[in-house]
Amino acid sequence: MPRLIRFLLATMRVIAMGLVICLAVGACTGRGAPRVVKIGLIAPFEGPSRPLGYSVLHAVRLRIQQWNEAGGSPQVELVALNDDGDPDLAATLPGQLAIDPDMVFVLGPPQGHTALASAEALAEHGLPTLSLAPLPDAPPSSVLPFAGTGSRLAEALDGHAPGAAPAWQMPLAAPGIWLGDPLALAALVNDSPELAPAAGSVAAEEAFGAWAGASANGLVWAAAVPDPTALPADFDAAFEAVAGSPPTPVDRLAYAAADQALRLLAANPSRASLLQALPSTPLPPIHLFRRQGDACCLPLSSEP
Image (cartoon, rainbow, N blue to C red):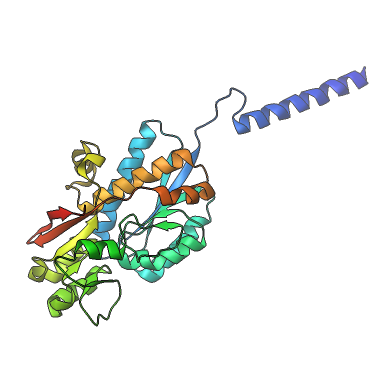
C-alpha cells in the first residue's frame, strides 16, 4: 500500500508539472497570450528640438495604437528614447535598445546629424531600422534610408540648387543642401545664405524657424513624404486630435514608417528575418516645399 501511495503521489506531481509547463507556453487550450514585441524610437524629447520629437512620437504612437486596437499580430509596445538632439548621445542609444531581446525594430532619429551619428551603432547591434532623416548614399545594411538619401534629395532640388551637394557637417566650402542640425542651418541662412541654397526636412523644424527668423523665408527644401493616398483618409484629423496641431510632412513620414515597420513585423518574427526583408521596403517619393513666414511647408512639387 505505501508503494502504491508513493506511485500515485509521484504521478500527480508529474501531471501538475505538465500543467504548469502547458500554461506557461499557452498550449493547454491551443491559444496563448498575443505575442508582444517592441519598436524603438530615437528622437529629441528635450532641448530646442523637443517639439519635433513629440510631434514624431504622436505620429508613431498613433499608428501603433491603431494596430494594437485592431488586433494586429504581433502586438507592439513602443519604447522611445531621448537623444536630446545630440549626436554623441544618439550614438549610444542603439546599445540600450539592443539589450532587450523583444526589441526587434527601430525608427531612427528624425534629424540628419543624429541619424548619421547613430547609423553605425544600429548596424553594429543588428537592429533593423527605418531612418526618419536623410542619410548618405551607402548607409549600413541594417539601416534603410526611409527619409531618402543625399543624392535623391540633391536630384530633386537640382532646379533650385544646381550642383549643390548634400551636407551634414560644418564647415561648408561650397554651396550645399543642408541636412544636419537646425542651429547650423539658421547660422548659414543668417550669415552665409549662398552656402545653403536649399535644405532637407530640418528646414521644417520649429527651432530653425525661431533661430533663423525672416532669413528662413523663401528657403526651398526637400523631404521624403508619402503621397496622400498612402495614408488613411482620416489621418489629419486623427493626428490633430492627439497632437493638438496639424501634421507636418515629417509627421506623415513617421506615421508611414511606423506602418511599414508593422507590416514587416507581421511577416518576419525576428531581427534576422527583418534584416533580410528590409531592402524590399518601398520608399516614399521626394516632395519639395518652401518656407514662407510662419508656414514651414508650402508644397511645390514631387519627384517623378
